[in-house]
Length: 442
Image (cartoon, rainbow, N blue to C red; front, side, top):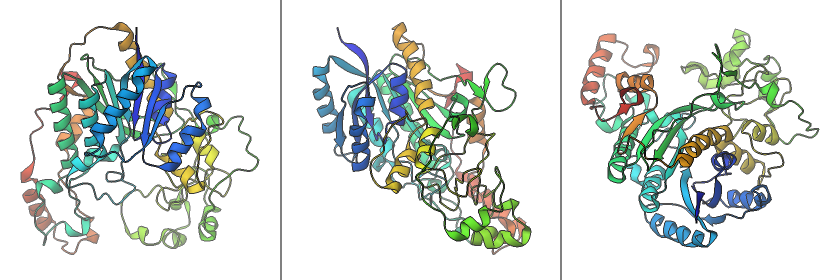
């Protein structure tokens, strides 16, 4: 009799999501990633994978090769007496990340999420899990810079509206749910809510072929826990850490000069007013919180999102008490990689693998919920449904404006009435949300 508890991993990275699923009782069968250093990392840590060697592919997954790769993997794992129950992956997120240029996509069918959906149709796993950045929810198919919005410019097209790319993804997920009778749930998970020492919000999509609604309940909370445990702090995460020669990428001397004047838990705003503009340069005349500029972490809070470059200007990760960025090992601890997990490549490659990974707590929480359903072996009641796990999130998405403008002081035309007219003209393309139900409606 076959043991139906295997994982096929696409866009695998350093296996953060998969290690979490493994901790819940599933076994990694195959991993696919086009990064040579990622594949080397997996190979070098195979003894940490309980001595079981997964099938590894160094491939770029796309619409043209996804079918032969899926077929090849299914053929290769037949001999293992295990069939895949979970298809898991974290497709590339750069087009949607708020830390990037947000160029988004004119045709998302060339992106990893569409390729992953096609893989679900081919493999038809009992469950699937997709992780991506939160920013995908507001991403437009076609990005128009803020400097080209407002009076004097054409109204937004539908492709330029907030969320136009995500709505297309949701429509395809709904079609997938109806075509193959999956129950598909989606929403935002914050890793800190599941015991990770990091506040990292991610879009999660979970599919169940048996029609089960699956969504992990938070185990931790920031304020007013109400029976939950409190968020894990950076101090707790580093308890017992002995790293006498930390490996890290150095800050520029100018950056170090300013960081020396900033206490733990603060950023550029803690500098004297006469120093702030010189400290962050052109960003001073921008808008928004800019909380990541010259940021020093706090011991009594979780870390912010671990990125692929802790020295980056807008997403800086400076140690609370030392004038240096978080080390390779510290970043790995925050992402919850096992002790001794080795990352291949140069320092930049190692930071990249760690920062791009899914926190293991997220994979573990999802894996536990899937394992509960798997052990029951019963049919669910929600076949063919696409469900948002958070009614308030769904309402916010429905009610949000289709676009935004620069602050008044940064606009060429400073007439509020003209801006209001332009915004009203750009809001005429709002689409229907009737197809997107929430768990509250079930």
